[in-house]
Image (cartoon, rainbow, N blue to C red; front, top):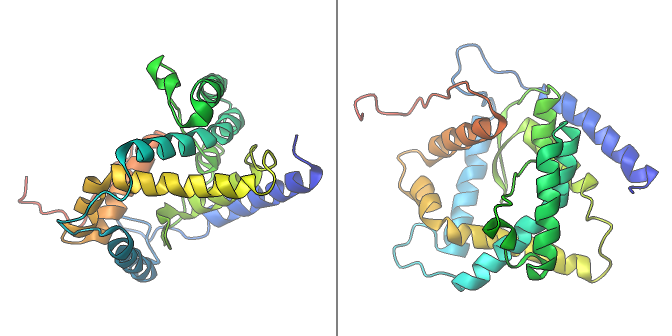
Length: 246
């Protein structure tokens, strides 16, 4: 059970999140709520340059940087560490069914799956139902706010940035590990992100290096996918789409 200090901090962050998500309003007639586009593009360009340097993104001779079994194991482990937070957020959203399924998945993969490196839960039909505090804020009625691009982390929105901060504070696993174990866990989570970059490398390369405007393409795909996850049916239009390319 979280102590009063973290609980108060989480409450303050929730209040800040609700305020932050409503700060930047969409300009009338704009296709996207992107008032910080110039700044976002600068961060995006820096992220692409880093991706090219670290992962060899966009290069035809790029080699896998992790053996496939290692990449799969790290991705499974990182995903499993996120299940307790997903359980908590499902409960905060008033959705007990996915909370129960995610809890059962976490227990099975942590035990039978060797700490989460294997994924027996999926094999028996216990699929992950990912969620986060950004979605919780959406369920509570907080507006999306402006589109943002974060250093290293990539595309997001004001609401989702606030949600990431709260997720970090209220994560049930935060107090489960001492030193040095918590550093190993943090390294494993980072390894999971690296593994995901490898697993989805072709799709990411296509967006970042094969698009006429990689920023516009990234923004479109991120918002479409995020809105789908949140059950938002409003269509997002791409102002850079070729009307004669259909």
